[in-house]
Length: 198
Image (cartoon, rainbow, N blue to C red; front, top):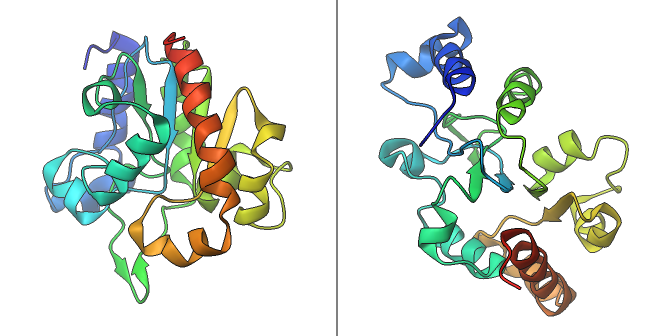
């Protein structure tokens, strides 16, 4: 990634911060991507174990589906000049009883503003899941994730709320067929506009 000195300094400070000492002790590196010219930010929850070990975010079945929804190729998605991948926490939080633990609540408020200050060309934030939506749509999110996603047009052109693309969400998709029929094509259209594809 081609980073400015200021953005590199923020990431170095984040990596060495005492609050992330536990991650350093485990050999973890922050999982994120971006550059000063990035135009679209993908803001999800936190890297899973696989992403933490490989250092490649969204390198799984969820990522395949996400790229399909976005209407982009792998090389476009992983081009930091186009896409910034900035989860709500840059480190795998560990496993809970029903899946991965949530991102730390203080991580995004502390680091996201400084990171995004170094990426001034971001014009669209794709907000994946309730954690990202509560933070970035503070006071504007609906009563639940489904209602927020269904109201996506209210947040355009700067934010686009999404359900997580995990294959485990098949029951949600079966109940909410409007998502594939309406939301996915509009997401791809918005991404195409931002990237200048048409």
